[in-house]
Image 1: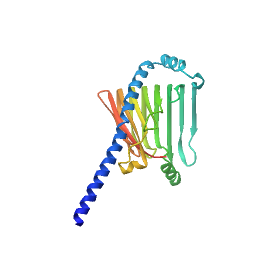
Image 2: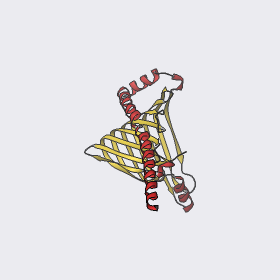
Image 3: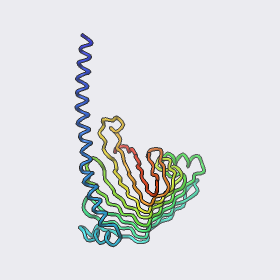
Image 4: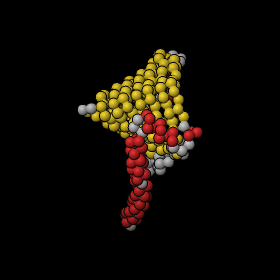
Length: 254
């Protein structure tokens, strides 16, 4: 008697759980449909904005010019504070932001670079930087041109960014944003797809209070590698002049 009751309740619970999880998985799968459409639209837009003149002409001629912004020769330099050695230097020759609609925009940068070094030399500052996710080590980035197309009206995530970079170089050794990072790589042309804060169905307990950010990278004329281990995990590596990789980062839901 007890055995038959137990088997009956287990069978009913299995049916209920299976039905609920199937519904949640169906919700998650619907993310792929708008994502596919977005990627096709993005590919068409990058075909139109593959150089500076076309990008600025297209972005300036569409919609609200009052929200367009172009800055020239911007940058800043900062020295390290407290018990730290180092500093930060960054600059951009041209930085343009063009609004295409309420939910989309294009950002274009030419001649941009940055360098940062932070070496804490006391236990207090080392502990402070580690707990805050600040850089401990050094990193350098530089690129000739960068164009990003951003959409914020995508279901089940915060936004999507597709980026094209020309003559991109980056190098880092150290700890940054709660992640150990090491590597140096150059790509003559690179494409990145950033999916920010994807709302994963909570059939997996961890994702009931976490979203996940995914970044995919593809490069041509690529040399070098980079490896991230920590809050963000992933790698980017080259083979016979081509590069590819991905990075995953869970983020606490707000």
